[in-house]
Image 1 (cartoon, rainbow, N blue to C red):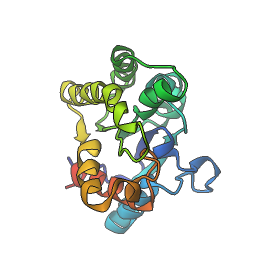
Image 2 (cartoon, one colour):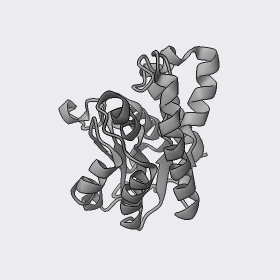
Image 3 (cartoon, rainbow, N blue to C red):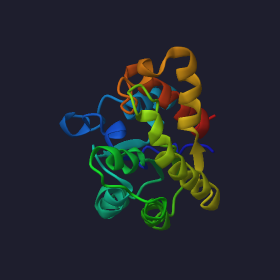
Image 4 (tube, one colour):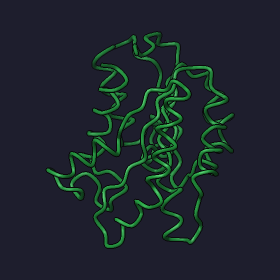
Length: 204
């Protein structure tokens, strides 16, 4: 897929804290994570032809939260491309607040997002790089949600960025904590890896 080159068009990145990364206190509205890295990469690659980038991530969000704010935070920008990274909080809340999200509910919310879009879409897998005791057991909850994301990518003709698969491979050599100190929130190296994967699967 070729990314839209028209600088009058907009790419929206939607998600949770992995996408947010302080964007609401950043004068540029981008935060200091992978969205900023993608912005810088595109600036170097495309110069003035780079599309506008909007970071619509909000820390703590689950798929149902994205659906609730989708019209104002995403659709209102008339995006030429939407990139979605959501799902880890749908798993995490089961273990820290006893507030689970079933795969069926996760899929229903995700479909709400996709059904409203008429532009190309990128789906980034939610990921987990276990570093804390007990995090390995989260796979029981996360893996069915990964299956949902992969299924929807095929069904809706979206670009799938296999984030969980690729970061797990990198963690085997670099160490999980090097990429995400708590297993969920990326380090600077983890965000760089996310941006590189996004470019690889979306641009190359």
